[in-house]
Image (cartoon, rainbow, N blue to C red; front, side, top):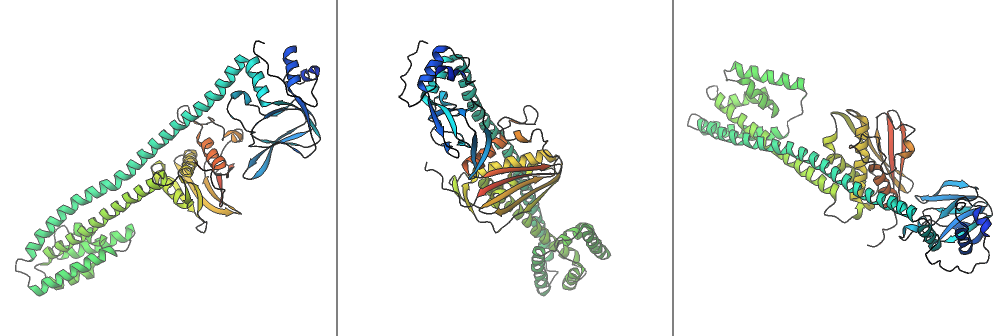
Length: 484
């Protein structure tokens, strides 16, 4: 070894070099390396039930089990979840990534289940040994660790850009429909207003006295009022009403009565109303009067269509703002139902005609503090996966509720379910069942980190053919986030 070996600290008890070599991690080292480890390490004991090291604390030591039984635990939503237990001599834990060089913390907790004995190396000495004795392995480990971290970051950014592009395309499509409808309605409105002025001139040329003209204007006001209150008719009811009006108009010699009938029925007008028009103006002036009133009805219908289109555009823009949260603080008090509705609106373009969306919201749920834009990303990932699983037909159910001091959001689909052999891997980074180029395998990994790491919640999955449910649990009163 050509590097200077740092001095060992004074310790009460150490292992002999021959004992160190019996640990499988060190069995291939040369005598000088084993002697150095024996000098740098120390033996520590822990009583049954004692904490060896705690998750989240600075990773200061590398522990190797000599005797006894231990268990490893991770904290998930405030609960200690056991991830392993063993009594195998030589297993290790603690500062396992000290050689990376970044400030490290313990990634789990270790507890002694029985009286246990450990060979303990300070993190700095362990890191020095790995970097000095295994330079080629260090390059590989650094490349693997840093490369995967950078790859995950870049692929994650790429996935976000692709998702943004897909959402933008869907939003553009959704905005185009009401915008085109408004343009068409505006063009039609201009024509109808011009025709209405022409008919008004023919009506008011002196053939109708002022009394009848006043009555006709009153009928016009009534028609406008009835358009806004027109009942919703079934296709059969509409057809019958149009046939009745067409017969009435044809019997009185009005040309193209079927065209007038469809407009009058859409405006909520009937034969009784036409009888009153005839009584007001007489038979000779009936056709110009009816056409003038029909233009009025059509004008109101077009104005309503423009109004509906404007409301829809405004709703879509509002949903986009709610989804992106660009004009709001990252951490804020939110209503999860507003976030879910905004996400469904943004993803509307991805829904096939055969997919039914069911909302089962518990409106009594309180608002919660959360990172709203990032929760929207979670909903997007889960809903997009559900849509992909169902294909062209199925039922997507969005359900909310309360469980103790948590609220839950469930995304359920009627797809084929997740096969048992891949179920344990679905939250792994880069794991995907989609063809190459169609999925990065980061959607669920990102969702898990947002929910579990950032919101201190949990994601649970139950799956069976025809019933797959992703349940997101969020604390109702979480701890405040750390200051920026």
